[in-house]
Image (tube, helix red, strand yellow):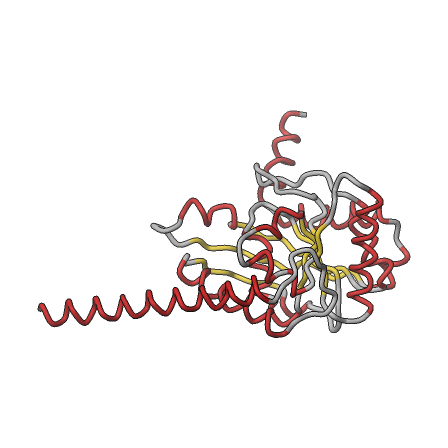
Length: 256
């Protein structure tokens, strides 16, 4: 029994040591070879692997089970993907499921200050956006359009702009769809459910997350439609797939 215990301790110690070495490797790659003040417009295959592999490991140990529907709807080539937003895990789950599409998110600047990962996502062409300055926001859109036209990455956007704390859809920013219009690419409409439970369940419980690819709006339709109309259309597609929105509608109907 004592020998078995020693073997177990050695194995655990070895795994812990390997984890520390891997973390040190990530830190070296992040802090020695990435300029924190630069926005990179070339997608690094190396840093993509540094993003994807730890994501897979983290989701495994967090016991996150992902159920995916609609993968057959995914378009060829680059696109803009839009989704509801209820947790910081939303983009992580999405880029994990859709790894081969190289999604780069337009994100708030605070996310680029996260130790190690904030630098790694820079090399994967993630873009920071200033939500309070329209002129700076336009510059971000121009960069995103350039990335799409040059087929470097697909672009991920949350039309709500921020997370919804009650899991219900907030107002959409119609300007979110300008990127797809100007780049001439389709819009992929997605919903995620269950991501808000991951931090509550960890480490005692597993979490089931649903990612549903609902629709793909072709590039020609995107270009021919006003952003306000696109916004309403996409919001309805998402709402029809979310139980919280259907419950809200039923409640509103009962009140009437």
